[in-house]
Length: 246
Image 1: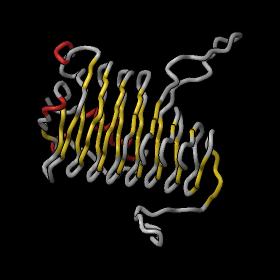
Image 2 (image 1 turned 60 degrees about the vertical axis):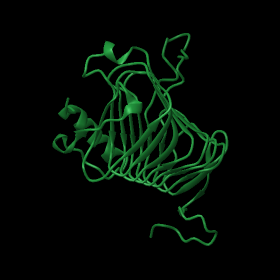
Image 3 (image 1 turned 135 degrees about the horizontal axis):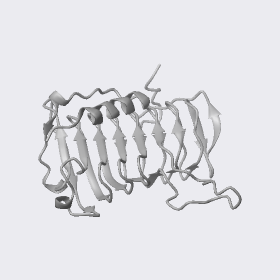
Image 4 (image 1 turned 90 degrees about the horizontal axis):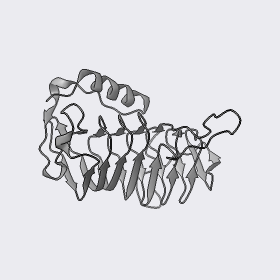
């Protein structure tokens, strides 16, 4: 079964929104057989191999109970390496994209709402990271060249509603999470619903990000607050490394 034009249009719009250097065409995609991902429709294209491993995959229904168009779709760009610790998918029409050259370790993905979408850009590197997409139609988009430490958690909803007693208005609606390119996320950071983080920003260890963060800033604390602006950073680990960008 091929990937629908509507789905590719949706993904390409997300790529543009989160600064991911990719444009997908259905004619280029081919099925990818991943024994560890039984029940997930996997695709790639022919410019190079993708390496995929998974420990645990769980569905709310067995794959046989979903029609072909309801089954989750995972697209692996050439040269990516993805190691899943756990995948939980409870609703139909969920989609994940993993970018070229990405090195993704110990991923846990929980897609609780239907039509949940996770896109991860080119050359992204992660340690142990959990993506939780709760409520219908929410998205997490990670731009090219981002760097995640260990113990990172991103979630698009609080899962339970909080309401105003007088008006009945929901006070904590779900929201998409978008990280622009070259964001460095430190150890044990939590990023919550509705957050956008600008290009080349740094989030310090153990921060909880509850509001959007401007580009080229360093933010720390609970809740995370900007403590320095006009910064950049380098992926090199030597102490005297110069910034990667102009």
